[in-house]
Image 1 (cartoon, rainbow, N blue to C red):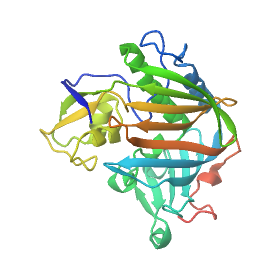
Image 2 (tube, rainbow, N blue to C red):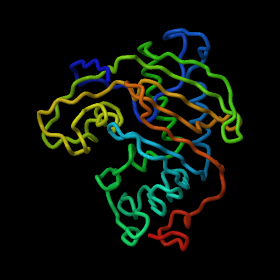
Image 3 (cartoon, rainbow, N blue to C red):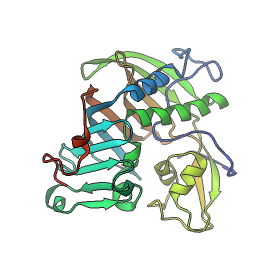
Image 4 (cartoon, one colour):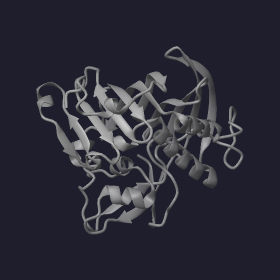
Length: 298
């Protein structure tokens, strides 16, 4: 991994889950460049915020260290604001369920594993070790809107510094839907600041300080295995951007960001998320986010 560490702790910019989309006059120019680098992302965010709810099959795959985990398929129900139900329906973790409703259950995640382990339901901190096992992002960052919002924050920083290069890769058919495909390239060298960990500080605290994603910091620092696995006095790299390369897919009809692929500074696939069979404004109600729902197994 190519790294460029710069000492400092005052960076307030943007970067997080899902790095970016476009590029314009403020930065570098290239064939196939996009005139308005924020247009598609802003439209996706606007549309997502206007929705009352949606359902989809979320297909995700994430890298942990040097290992790319198997692809997961998850039925997701999402309702504004901040109500999320997930059920794993593919071969990986089949039968696992998770439920999060902001302001309920003491803001805890209710979940159980699949198979025999599903007999035990737990209520845990959504940022805790158990909830984050095998996940890049906490459940309260799930959903198209949150993803797009974080993309915009990272993109805006790249535009301000002139460090993002964006290519229009044209349209294609993805799962029977026409999508616009855009590739974004961030600096070849992983720019970063060096942060000295304070006593009792966790990666979540550091991520909030730098407006960065927790797992991006973890991934950039060899030997760090968990959000609370750092000690006072330890030096950590905090990457400036979320990833080196990002490929985004926007549904032409709805304007929503329906798939994104992110690659790290070794050009390894870091993560991919895709919303398939997306159904908008289906009329989800309280019962869909009720752990006592007879169709759930909490």
